[in-house]
Length: 336
View 1 (cartoon, rainbow, N blue to C red):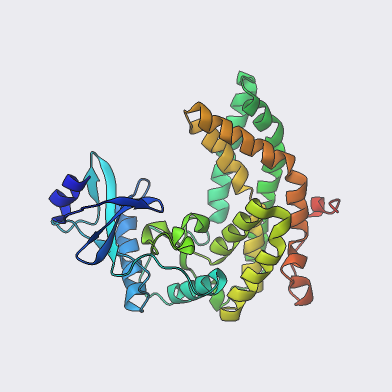
View 2: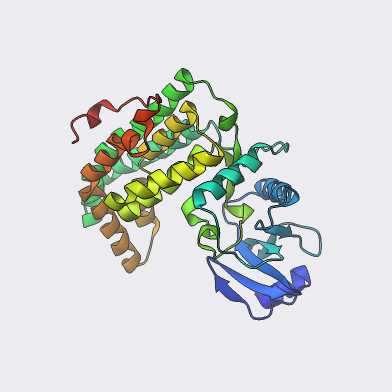
């Protein structure tokens, strides 16, 4: 890797080490990070470079800037593997304000970006993305039924999928109803979000803010995924953390009825289930497969508690006291 960096960037990468997810090194008092960018097109990388440049121009020193190769390219290929390199003048930092407040400020800056963003745009596309993912898994599920059960994971998947199919269909319909019933306001404009906020290690002080983590979407994406992560890790102990997270966020940016409904729709979509099933069937190592089986068993065994969480979400975040109405899911009514 060091020789590749020396050849492509004319930079000496001495003492490389792994911090967070990626390899980093210090060169001339600048902190460099090498990031694989599988699944990202070069058009997306160009937009992400503009997005990061915009935030840096607004004074966010925690955002890393892209480093072009000696030939001026943003993407380099090491043994056919696409990578980008980013840098910043400060080390990864420990936050001194809450994640809710910092995220609100991040979203606030992103909403004012004048750049036309097309390739990284995800706003308004949830129904289509989820519908495609659901159709693909349903087809796979039907093939599995025809092929027969060969592992315990097969059995768990075949038996549990109809329930999560119903949950996903409710999420898709919830987005559709929100778009019909509610009028978006300024808070609902597209902004810089994370593909998956819990994966971004700047929250833990292990990485800088990396544009390779970003998409252009509604702020509800980040808010829902952070709540999902809090609940998944802590379940019953998560209530106060979730309340505080939203209190901190809304001190900077109050959320609209449209935003609250999108947050709830995204929580309804059983992303944790889909990722577990998809992860199992593409993994090759036995230990990895066992971990996915254990995860799926936990998800299925705690489905009732998850329903209770979704059914009580309005009360958890205090919307029942604020004249904000979230339509209920009828089949949650039996949960108590």
